[in-house]
Length: 135
Image (cartoon, rainbow, N blue to C red; front, side, top):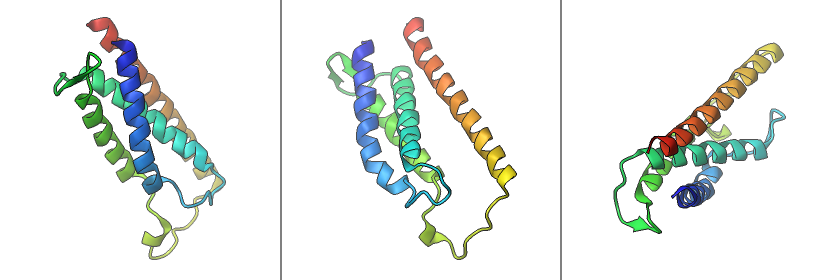
């Protein structure tokens, strides 16, 4: 079951990433950040959340290779929609450009979001591990 669940989560996350990344990826790296890093963060969060949700949600729908695939799809779509809604809007939606934050403030925000990202990754991995050891 482990490998089938892993492959299902990977396939769903890859497919949803191909759909949602063009909608959420920054138009260009205007602040020195990498667009590749944003895409990898999006994929990693989507993959881990899809896997964690897929193994914890009550199985329903038709099985595929002994695993129920519909919970993975439902959780993946929900998480992808949440990540897309939280993404930075495109430049065309601004009436005027907001003031750039101070360098120290930008560094603090970057550090805080980096810490929250790693806390989320560890929590999702712990959720996946707990699902396999509890059942």
